[in-house]
Amino acid sequence: MHPTEEWLKVWESKRSITLSPNDLDKYFTEKEIGGITVDQISLGEVSLPSGKIFVNDPLGEYLALDNTPYFLETAKGNFPVTASIVTYEDDGEKEDLIACVKVAFTNEIAVRYEEAMKGIELIDELKENEYFGFSIESGLATIVDEEAKPHFTKFIEEFEAKSDSNLYDDYFRKLFKENAKNNPTYQSEEGEWINWTIPNTAFKVPIFQAGFGEGVYPSYFGYNEQGDIVAFYIQLIDAELEDEEEDDEML
Image 1 (spheres, helix red, strand yellow):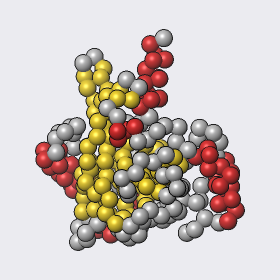
Image 2 (cartoon, one colour; image 1 turned 45 degrees about the vertical axis):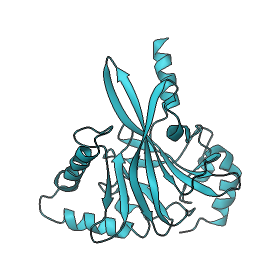
Image 3 (cartoon, helix red, strand yellow; image 1 turned 90 degrees about the vertical axis):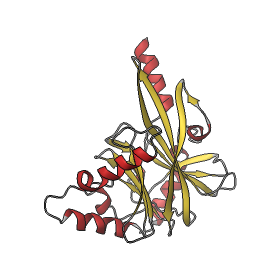
Image 4 (cartoon, one colour; image 1 turned 60 degrees about the vertical axis):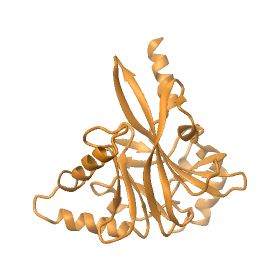
């Protein structure tokens, strides 16, 4: 589904307020943001044969009911996925969380980050410092291509059709725990991420813990100076905002 001309006209007039308030590549080049420790790990690759991206909760009905990818297309192929990890410390206890996820289409560093949209949002209602985002209920997020999505949802439907089967407990949990053993850096025993190949396909799909869990999160396309899309980002934690809130609590 392509956006209407009217929608695109309003979007063009409001593109300046869809910009990320943060330099998202800091999450992938720095070791500290606003006093918070930052590091980076590889999540493998994602398969984007059509360049039409869905980002959603892989559990429940969110992904199955989502029929509209982001209307801007990316490069096509398999691309590296990197997660930025932020470490919070409280009374000696450390917590490592996935703050941002990046899919790199080139080696260029983006100079502008605009919110990714489907072309069906109520764009007229968008105001400064707002975003539309996508909803997470299970605490997990995934990136999947339009060509891969039917295979993903078919697998879910067939698995859940089995009596007394729970998709996470009876299938994904084992994969998360196994990956945590094989790639323990910044992972709990239960696991924080997997790079899943949809059964009976070659489609690679990263699935990962979403920041603080349940919520609504924004995605962004990163552009170079020429206006080409060079990367895609999912911001799960605003480390600069979290640091400001901690400072406010200390006043």
